[in-house]
Image (tube, rainbow, N blue to C red; front, side):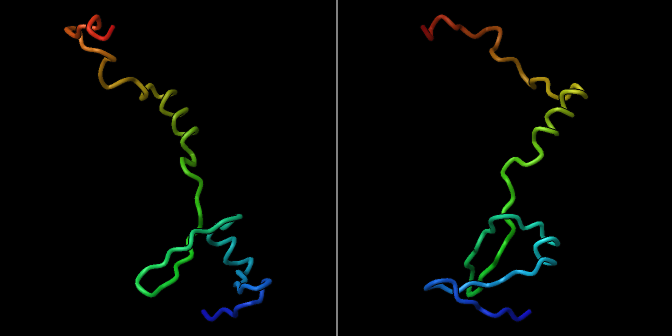
Amino acid sequence: MDVSLISIGNSKGIRLSKTLLEKYNIQDTIELILEKGYIILKPKTASRKGWEKSFKKMHENGDDKPLMADFFEDENLEEWN
């Protein structure tokens, strides 16, 4: 796809169509990656997106139990004082 550069102050930019923005769920920011002679534009996703819903589902299913105890039965906690 050919895209024309447009002037933005002293810089140049590109315009992304509404179709591309919707198709790739691009909101306010994108990640720009420079790699081996290519410029890659990648939708920026929120870190930990959906974790709250997943944690809630884990809790409802009882899947959020610790895999091991906080401390071992033979552990001497007095030495930490």
